[in-house]
Image 1 (cartoon, rainbow, N blue to C red):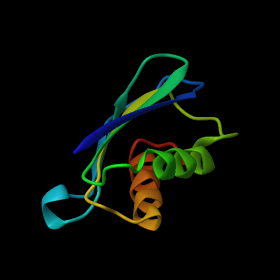
Image 2 (cartoon, one colour; image 1 turned 45 degrees about the vertical axis):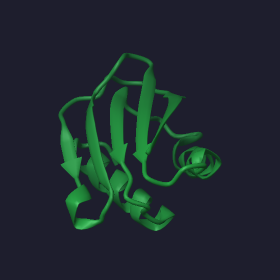
Image 3 (cartoon, rainbow, N blue to C red; image 1 turned 135 degrees about the horizontal axis):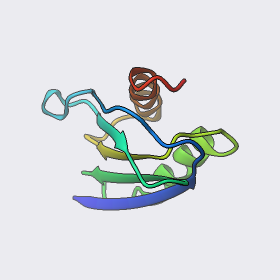
Image 4 (spheres, rainbow, N blue to C red; image 1 turned 90 degrees about the vertical axis):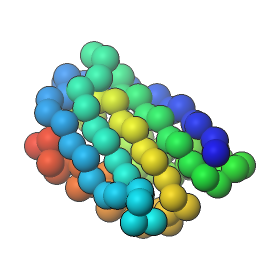
Length: 99
């Protein structure tokens, strides 16, 4: 198991909480909750050692250049593909009212 931490600039404070996916089913789990003003913090717990570069590239592609809410995101990865990661993050942001 490996824990990775990432940070991106954010604008408005986040509101609400969201939990999407389910680790026990062999899927990716994403928890979104209000965070620290001005930044979006992401913690990834992954079973795939050595995947930091892949995660960094994926998150850069998803979050760079977007107006994001200030939230804290916890991701529990079960070896999910980038498509599943994107889907779960989009579902989580939709649930808290930020597309």
